[in-house]
Image (tube, rainbow, N blue to C red):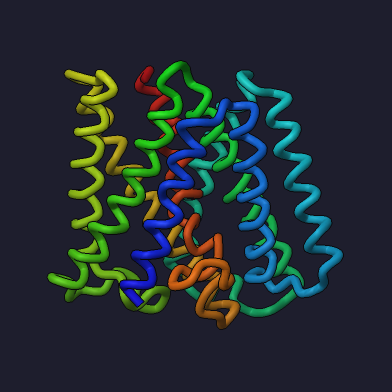
Length: 272
């Protein structure tokens, strides 16, 4: 399984990097929107929505929200959406403490989870477009945000395998350990320092960026746990089977969805 996951990652990573570095914002935004809509399709399944027509309707609604956000590009509304995204992940932290909340397959819980999907995906899209369009180095800042999440994921995996004893959230994701969390912090910090220096960040702002990396990694872990919670409620192993060894698109983007608003908001506050 590790070999299959590695080969899939080696195939996908260059495509994602090329998309970030080579596309202008007007092309980058709709391509990412399509990928995020595909993840929303998987989210509707995890939420318990079975009928195709309502699932398509929710995708249309999400696309409309993307379009409205694009129309408001650069306004205070963008910062507000990112702020909503950050606040949402704080709320999710409380949800994770109550595993059974929303677990029953009722209509009310389904609607709640569908609404949660909008709060996960729309602010993440606004955040990544905001980072990508933030000046001449926006492409590289976007890449740094993803590298932090990827490094944290790799650091957590190997640190957890080597030193993992104490479970992080056994009822939600039995494989995650506190040792993995510490490994994620270290890996994310190393990437942040290297990337920040390459982008010309120094002094107090580099320290601030390092603090932001810790918050970004925390958010990525919360995002991963939320999707794990959704899958346990839905009694499925993966959100889909699009990528061999990796599951569905949502399985690959869960951490990213949570990390992007936090990183974008922190970058804005730091004046980077």
